[in-house]
Image (cartoon, rainbow, N blue to C red; front, side, top):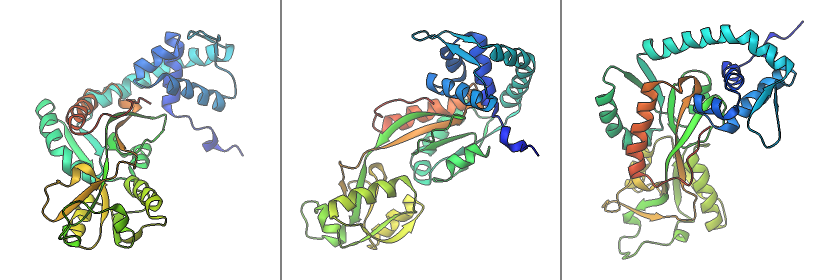
Length: 310
């Protein structure tokens, strides 16, 4: 019996092929979908794998494409039906969607989003926003259709999700000032090798980067005593003297009377991305939220090494 699940095709693949065939180039299709040239090419390659035949021919050195005989047949069969389907989807997304479901890690939400939401709601007062304060599950939630957009410290690398860098930040080691009450300068990182570390749950971006870097400094794995999912909880635990941690530099003020900090320049900075599903590439509310996040977060975060579109 034929496996019906073996030939599932994401509508994004068909949409990309349709636009490449219609406009005659990957570049034009990528601009229309707000994805990279490479992502458009990857969509078509994946569709060819599923279809089992070459659909598009390209001449070396040329960005113009020609359709293979099977590509012409598929394009002809798609043209009317796919346009109608996409038009109905666009009507639903643009005119009837009254809520955006957005995923954001807790610390980013608490620190940045009060200002972001104040400005966004001035431009889009009718839009309801539902926030999910998550970290490790954001990619899966987007792939499962549970989120429309996300701000994340992870690059997902999915063809059906468009991501663009908003900025990046450094990490710092924070510790209770009571540990070094007479110190006139910041202690050395090596002085924490035998002390308890408080960190994030397994798999979270900051935990992975910080424990790997500290292991290099210490010559052994840090002594993790407590884990939690939220930066606010970590700061509170450090503040009462239960351990040290590594957190975003913007999380704790240098003038905090209870918590000291040491910036660890050797740890690679963390990039923050804005992500949305490709089907919402032309949604005005998504664009407005992205622009607001880029303006406010970009002003407070360092500039990322590169702006990425996928």
